[in-house]
Image (cartoon, rainbow over the protein chains, first blue to last red):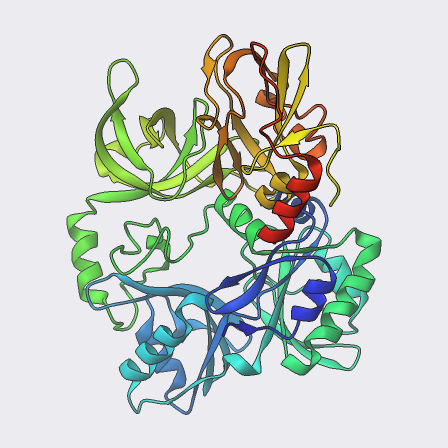
Length: 369
Length: 127
């Protein structure tokens, strides 16, 4: 029996198409994927992402324990800062990608992908041992993502707490009416915005407050479908598609999150070796140059002289028709010597050879970014 | 959801309209609702032969790809070129500007296809 978020009735009343995802009944779309996508890029949209997981590390050893689990520098965070980082296995493969919040010197919060909550909790608890306390608090958090150029004005209009000056990748406690929230200036869309947590019992009222004040800004509720096209346009990885236990951060273009000069972390030796030897393959951005939409699992091949499908060199990990760019875009792993921008490739789209070209990512950057 | 009474339907959620020996084919509003925003429509070549029940193209949305099936035998006489640049016409006007192809039939009719009432029944059962 699938779980539901506190907002399920709101989604049903709004006419959302609801499907099961990661064990939760979630809204995939309301007004339509393209409409929701474009609304986020031009004004503001609201997502229910309460299905995501929250794992808390508490105790004197919390920050050190958190730092040891990830490739990036949790130990360098101040209270109120957030960090994007992979969690790696000893061989450098990826357990999950997540945001790590430093709440206090003895309190760290990992926000993880919905599809990995139990796996991540087990891994973190096992690897941490008695360095600190590890608790899966996912059921205690509702999470809404308010995203788009109008998100900041909207949030500022319903809280007396200062949010306009909040730097990206910081978070603060705010009150919306009488609802206690944590608002972090983070998101998965490439737009400005806030991810706002509150107690599950308050989630419906928080959603209603945002939607009501948002009407003046053109707000729309947005589903998981739009989330996927938005993140792909800005080259954000999706665990299970672009990254998994068989891919390393270096292969995935996430080398910037791997801090080999910092403290020890799980996977450090393997990643240090890979950095020295170089990767054999890379996750690249592709744009289709002939008619067709590359999708997950489609083979990537070398083009023959006449542009037909040569031998396979890789696979598409994510692909779609980009609503902002109106072209078919994709990501996939290819051998290092085919990873340079302008390299011509062909994708096997259900037997048809679709011409593609490696491009430097991201596909889209918001103005001023 | 109401379906135009002057059209015939297939179990693959396509509609057909016969006029002067030519059948115009499209997908129904129900199909469009299920598919979501249409991003690409792959249609057969003009003058190619269509065979009833056989796949003759594909229709893609952001999230999925579905085959299109010819409702009748015949020669494809026209395809909707507008869909190349504006696949969203299928969403906006599935029975009008979002038509897909026309097929020339030699004297056969659409009696074997579902009428509006039968198609309504089919859709009700799928939901």
